[in-house]
Structure formats: C-alpha cells, structure tokens
Image 1 (cartoon, rainbow, N blue to C red):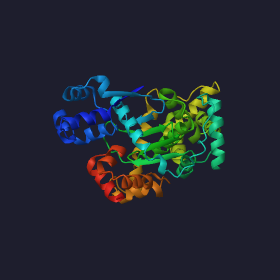
Image 2 (image 1 turned 90 degrees about the vertical axis):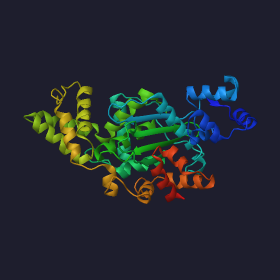
Image 3 (image 1 turned 90 degrees about the horizontal axis):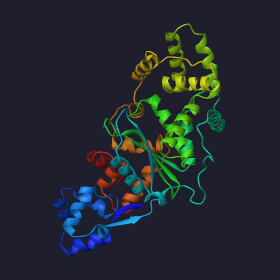
Length: 377
C-alpha cells in the first residue's frame, strides 16, 4: 500500500479556512509549485511538512492521508555516476516521474492490444545469456566479431514499447547515466539516457537498458545484474571473447595485451573494461585461467586514458555540450527514433501545462525547462 494526500479533504478544509495554495505554501515554507503538486497527487509531502500541514488544517492522519494499492506503481532502476548514493527520496522522485509519464501513455503510437515481447525466465547463467543475445544479434544481422550499431539497438526499443528520453544532466551530483521507469499497468518502459556520457560507455548503457526491457519482472539487484550481464554478452559475444582470450594468452606482456583490448574496444565502440570483463567471463565459464590486468589496476588506468581520447555523446551529436532547445528536442526523433517529445507536446498543449511541468518530468533546471517548453509550445 502507498500513502496519498486526501486531496478532497484538504481542498475542502483550505476553502473553509479561506486559504489559497499560495498562502498555504507560505505557511509551510515550501514553493507554491510543491503545494500544487501535492494537490494533484504528483508528489507527497515530506514527513515534517505533512505534520505541519495536519496542524494548520487541524486534520488527523486518517483524514489527511489515504492509502492505495501499489501493485501498479512505477518500477524504477538507474545507473548512477561514480560512488554517489541514491536516497529513498530520489527513488520516490523517480516514481513520481513515472506517475506523470502514465498520463502520456494514451498518446503513444504503440499497439495497445498486444503486450511487448519479454523473456520467460531471465537468468544470469552464462550459457542462457549467450543464447539470448546470440538470437538478438542474428535478428540484427551482426556477425560475431562485428559491432552492434547504435541504430540497431534503437530499433528494439520501439519494438518493445520502450520510449527513449534523451536528457542532458551535466555534472549534477545525484544524476545517473540512465534512469529506467517501467509502468506495469500499460507495460510501457521509459528510458532516460544521459547524453552527457562518454560515447563508448553510452552504448553499454543502451544495451543495459535493453536488458531491463526484456526482463521487466526482475527488480532491484536482480534486474541490475541481469541487465549488466545481458549488455556485456550482446556487445562482446562468446565467440569473439574466445578468439580474443586465445590471442591475449599468446601475447608476451601486459602492455601488448592492453593494446589489443583497446583495439577491440575501438572497433566495437565499447569501453576496454567491457571487453576485458567479457573475455574473463568466458574464461571462468570454461574453467580457464583468467587474464589478470587488475593486480596493479592496469586495465582501469588504460580505460580512463582511452575514454579521454573521445568526446561525450552530446559533443558527438551537437558539436557542443550546450545544444539549443531546438537541437535537443529534434535529437529525440532524428537520432533515437523516439516519439517522446511529440507525445509530450500534445499532452502539454491539451492540458495547458507550464514550464514547471517540463522541469518535473525531465528533472532539469527551470531555465532549461523554459527553453524546452518554448520550443514545444
């Protein structure tokens, strides 16, 4: 069960007391937008604000709050930057974004009669994941040693009723490389992909999110483990890992081994770490000795230096980290074949939403939200 504000009761009491939302916001020392979101049940007050609200309105907890079933609550997963911790407040914020996204679902150009294809019993067992990803590579028409192209990955998202939402989150500490929101009731998936991400990592995050889409029944750590395993196997398949394992064993020193891994990473447009880990997964599965490039953290230093040679996704797409709102909005359809901004625009216009609504859904600073809003409307 989940707590929601009893909006009817609160609205009635504030009218009886002659309180506007603006006055209530002032008394609670919060923004007017926060109170507006509470009244729409887009967000729920923090415990201290809830207690203060109860005192102001002279309402008991049972009168102020109502419980609803959480069976169809949004399911969130994310990849964070570095060691930044994701708080319970941030998780709830992502769920709030999911509740807003559910309002956009009727506007999506997806089949609303058939559910998207998913795996029956997803597992991280090596042979199983290789079988799944091998089938996908065959559907794409990619040979074992060839790169999985970005456009090939993008095609699967639409086929699986998943919506890519490109975002520019910059260096804000609590943001992640990707945020995944699954809405059980509509069986739609919304994937926020951070364009301020290194190019060779970006493909991995896309493949990781595709793993989530194929296995929506796996949640939290189980879902993350499957998505990681899926991404690595899809981008660096077993046959290639087998071939490169043998190649690395023949090389005389660590420097040559690292250079070879970097060559493969460059060819596949993935990070050297992804290549290295998949080669060793192959070795472990077949009871072979691992390639050790971690004793003095050699592979990690090589990975860092490798990434410095390439631009971020936003620089690659826009030739800058600060694209115009027009460039940014256009990228959703032109680059990611995503209907997001078309659907978003229709909803915003029909429901007379403001720039603050754009801010809530994209989780971006208000000035940036104003730019996107003006481009849409």
